[in-house]
Amino acid sequence: MCATCGCSGNGHQLKTLLPVQKPGAFAGLTLDRQVVQPTEVQSEIPAVRVQTPPPPVKTLVELERDILDKNKRMAERNRGFFEARNIRAINLVSSPGSGKTALLERTLAEQAGKEQFYVIEGDQQTTRDAERIAAGGAPVVQINTGKGCHLEADMVHQAIRELQPATDSVVFIENVGNLVCPSMFDLGESRRVVVISVTEGEDKPIKYPDMFHTADLCVINKIDLLPYLKFDVEQLKEYARQVNPKLEFLEVSATTGAGMDGWYAWLSQSWQ
Ligand SMILES: Nc1nc2c(ncn2[C@@H]2O[C@H](COP(=O)(O)OP(=O)(O)OP(=O)(O)O)[C@@H](O)[C@H]2O)c(=O)[nH]1
Ligand SMILES: [Mg+2]
Image (cartoon, rainbow, N blue to C red; front, top):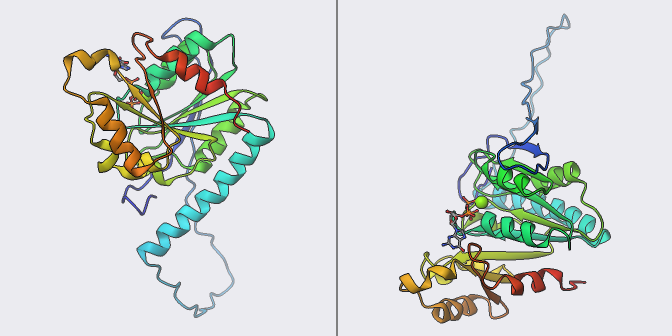
């Protein structure tokens, strides 16, 4: 449950999709979690009434702190796993439809021989993004969060156990499309990348500051559409620097491939 935003996860599901060569044809292994309800045990021993004090009532702030603390501990485990194997783990966050999956599709297609890639896909429903990634030949796990609006570190932990990423590889984690809650949940990633497309308006960094404040890199996508829009790239950068002066920027088009060399150079740099 996310006490912060009020979304209540009704149990997430993991689906591992085997990489395929032909788009559309994928084989899947479903690892649905089952919730087992406690059953009543019939006993012949007479019941003894024990007076137990009521559990302490927690405030919303305490609940939120508990959730974030638990998430932080699991995130550190993930981070230790990634660091021990020199794995670059990248948490891609954005509003829905900014082009996260399109960016990954092109990256996998153009860099497949140079790096070993693994992908964790987060969405509330469907395996559509995982199918797009599997069609490109990369090992991928889809996490469906149900009512949850963000990925959490324990979900990523389970996905890593499925994927078993190799030493020196790159693990992309595509978060649920949402500019608010994913900013609060450390997944143990090495770097956080916020993707914003030029159709969203340049004021998003000041309207959703947490997302831009916690990111290392801002990828400005869909620049092929700039001639048709009223969008000021420099204004966007200025707003973003107001909330995060250290934020780096790249301008790309996942559709045409413009600017992708800068993205590949950023990916291949040493982060240790
Ligand atoms: N013109 C243009 N369209 C793009 C570009 N990148 C992505 N798109 C389109 O934008 C739409 C959304 O792209 P996705 O890659 O599905 O976006 P996403 O961020 O993964 O979306 P969610 O997973 O639903 O949050 C699709 O119709 C893409 O074809 C781009 O660089 N230029
Ligand atoms: Mg996507």
